[in-house]
Length: 490
Image (cartoon, rainbow, N blue to C red; front, top):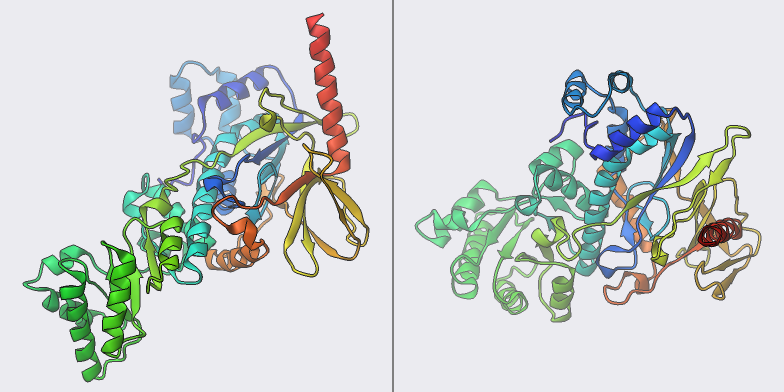
């Protein structure tokens, strides 16, 4: 599950294509883009994550003896190709948008520039790693936004689709804003806070609820959150919790991190009634935590109902992104290097579905911010050799409905190039920040979004436009392909 060598974490056709390229020698360098077409969960943005694990995968990309023996046993690979694989290492360049950045459809999250065999091999693993963590980070960002500053604990490990999904899903959730995770291994691996209380079984294992609470409070006086819904929240759980808190206060034990957790029932009603009881006893600062199949929609609804909940435990629906179980990232060939002049020849994929027509060429992405507000005005996908001068006025336009245009006055905006180089000539040239540092960065990133783009229903889309140069190149290729099709029909 955590093997360093994930070389065979690939689809078979990547290897059969590699052998095809090997048997028909070609040293051509190509550009592949990894991007997605639709924001998850019907939202207005996504949060990219998984870059560090992708880099680690590239660093450890090597075929072991047992890998070669297994491929030989399939009887579809020839010995000269297997010999090539036994000495294989990645030699290309990779550019990526840093983890925690808010991103939008159709812009490259990862760009691979490498010999075609190498670029083909890494496709599946890159998609697997970036798709999963970006999906969970996006879902977690929505949940944390609904919580409006209240801490959110990720505790979906037992419902995740396997250990790696639990470990790295928790990592992605932390990046997007969660205060902590229940997954101890994630805490160890990435130095993030681990949080938790106790289960109903703890209560049930004692003769009565009060004894269970009292025992737990003695063990953890500095972190005493009591689960109050095992029997009856308002008639038993909260009164017994208050009794324990009163005894702690009488004994001079500081009540710093304490409170109750409700895991079932009408959370809005129960939390409001529980707060009244706690406040009447002098514990109005107690945390009231809630769990029970929460997601961003339910949290938003509970907030609107005036629930007195100020801490949220979110598990299944976060770690599985249950309403949108796949991120949908794809990996498409965008350009082939001309060996005569080292320029890149743009390539385009056509489709009956307009949204599946790719953007050709060796590209980069610029983000345009309003100087006055610090908010994102638009993203502009450009060819890699283009530059933007924020002192110059420019016209940006929708690449589909081209009549939709916006004038951005020089001096009123800032520009940032999103793609950074992470692999050069096969070696790492990028140091990933810690998960908690990425979390801080992601918080600032989300603040660059307008609230209208963060709402859960019918969010305002952020403009992702093409530069005039890229638009013209795409239009020329489309016309060329169309003319070729007409000639074929004749």
